Length: 244
Image (tube, rainbow, N blue to C red; front, side):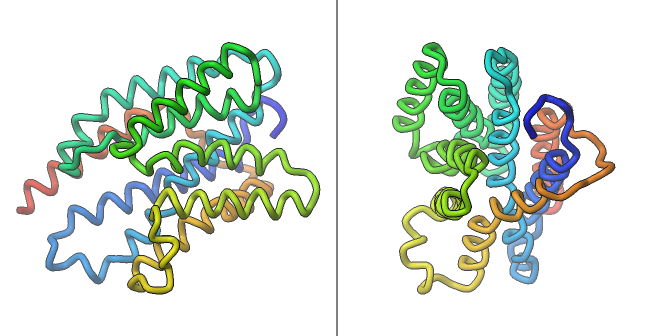
């Protein structure tokens, strides 16, 4: 994980993130009176966002000093964030910005922390200010924007004690991103909510385990993943309309 060579374990993390996201969103297509037996789909879906954040953190971690491809990476995320907003609003019918905006802001902050160049530090401060201003309508809020940076810090940890602290912090940030202040009353929440928050908190550790595994063959996850986001939202939205 110290070069830009393709990493099969990281591709596996991306595949699981992508599939868990689709499973999560597919739950909304099920008629409301039949959703409860499929609540497990929502729990699985809680893995998606932390694993996407881990993929961003790992990609930045692998960037050598002076690497300039990060702006192209950011451009792809923001382009499809704009393309995806209308399908996202149509499917969820919520006044929220889609997940790609959150990941894009998180990427800028994470690159600023990793490379520490003057231009990236300024960009990181601007991204943090934007995230703070728009946190009420950002998917996963300010904690979601900061999660890739927390995971990058965890990836940099070398001593056992530091690893325990940084990965525990990343797990907490992942839980807060998914549940907000509800993490403070976890014991009073319904079992389904507890399961979802627990899955989100464990997702970074699960992703770390996958990245330590020696995976020989995994189909690469390339730039085609970006259009999958708006396309799957359009397809699920069409199915939802057809079944109502």
